[in-house]
Image 1 (cartoon, rainbow, N blue to C red):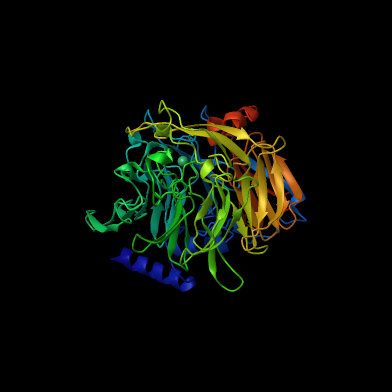
Image 2: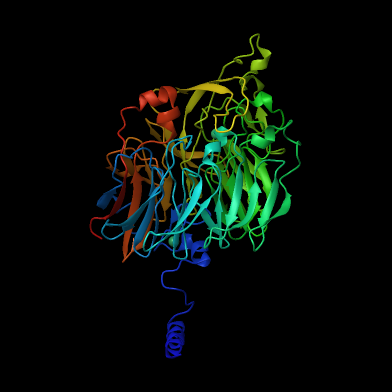
Length: 585
Ligand code: CA
Ligand code: CA
């Protein structure tokens, strides 16, 4: 009884001392919703659920950035190197960063000292398509939560690294894996699935982040039933996704892919989560006449209900592996409209109304696009160049190989997994783009569980001798490319922009660079000793602005890059996180 009285006295005094009493260090839904406005922490992938990757910090700016120096670097160690595509999250003096092979590190931000690490025990036979990467963790309450290559979600205690809950999302032997960072929206944990090259069933799932229990599931293939889950965890029907066989012939939709492998973004004003979807499976488009919804699309999902509110399909009946997974980043226009920008793998930049999905603008952000001559703004549909669709093998005499075509962009995309940034100061998107093409042809294929389900062959080709990558500053309203910074190797890391007038990004050649956001002039760079394929972040602690980047060359390019892989095969592997601050701060 005495204890109870003491406790209530303590609670009363804490409540009196400060508004909004919460458990010490607990990360709330409101804190995550406010993440972009609070530079003292980085609580979400995208540095705010909108995914703008914009910081209000100004200590490091166009004048001072020349004095940026490393503070510490921590190696992930071991023989396990490979691609490091992770964005760190940071709270209460601790950085949480995922690494290749489903590892997660908790690091003291002040010293770079490792507090604990979690190494997920991976079974034999995992099937990640595009390297053993992970893109980051989510923070909620006392937990840090991430997805693994064997298609599980793991929630760890932020202080101790002990497993609090673990859930199997799906069967890794059927090709499922998890590589995206989960997001938190309206108190729910939202995740996608990877595995579009294996004919998996794409979907978005909402869980209780405290327990991992399912709240709703929304398949992204037209024909599947959605579910919500009652208090006992029993599934209850929650409306079909579209109409069976409306956009797919026969049974093809059942193994139709549309994986949600890059995760999503969320806008608190619209209440909608935005998830992009990958290619329809198999790649051979002649097997599946129709639009093949909801592949290669942006889906806006009401987080409260698990229903699709609108969809916009970037590439109907995709025949080039133009996964439409790219991040939909919402922003406000001067007249108060909420729009979203998306730099699609197919080479076009799209601007949609974030509430209705109506197409507002669409224009190329790469120089060469062969599959379509443009996007019809009235209908929202691409103007296909029919001659550029790889041919139908069943129309050839032996039925084995359809006509091969040269297509640009390549299937590695005008842009791939590397997230862009948006600055409300300049009104520009900073897009890590690539100029490359491919020879692509179709072959016969049938679905077999756990086997690659492509029905296509390909070779990636370079287009220009002097560069593949180009960081481009893009005006979403006019479609103008305001400046560009070319790069010899393909860009594969994300972008950060700041109120200090800077744009940060890394290159496979190992340089972390800072550019003037207005002009594109390079103001600073630092060699991290291996390639960068991850997005930088910045935060403030004790009056000092820090910049962090994960380094470690790898990802899809060395595995799938054909002629390009040969051109970049001298790049060294690694696996570290680097932190910088101004020399004088
Ligand atoms: Ca924040
Ligand atoms: Ca794909």
